[in-house]
Length: 255
Image 1 (cartoon, rainbow, N blue to C red):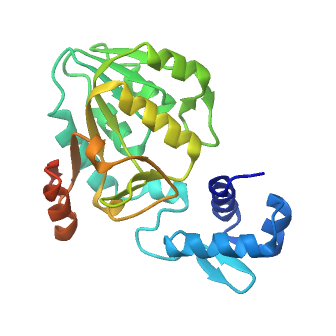
Image 2: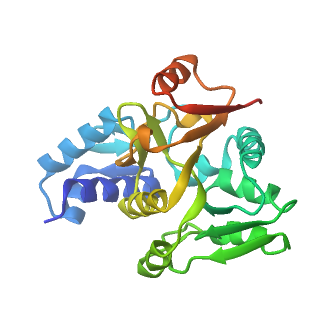
């Protein structure tokens, strides 16, 4: 039988594709009762991930919404560039860094190249940016392309990663919450992020202000597992104070 979290992933995937989903169709697709689907939709609505309508659900039309993915990654470019500039200053020459896929880490990759460094990544877009930079020693983790992302994942990437130890990890997340930690929508991505966190001596989260106090589907880490956060100056003051209460190191990029 499909686990609840697996159903929720499928429901959100269908919603991301078709914008409108119906209880009757989801019941047939997932092999559960309509009562179960209605319960799933109620839970996902409570987490701000969709809006229920008669007989189904639609995307929640809220500013800063986490779906759909393409829109999320294309927005807030000014903030992401500013965050990348601050993150660059944290890197020391000759370090080995691991860069997870994401629009902000791609911005950081664009800025690298003025000093010698080793970069490990599983993201094809980041690798493409770094190919022409002679000061960057590049190692690409192999694997299988997941969905429509540019990241490679799977057993091959995991096996390579287990044999490595890096000075610093730069990564992103879909949602950040003091209570619920760091969350994403997909269990494959959640498992991967757990693995990359375990492989690094220093954990640096790159996240624009819109990610805070948002909760996606699956938690992969607590706030306490992060060593420092780089975000932008539009971060809500209340969220900032909550992070400071956790003795979190926070770098603010002006925009």
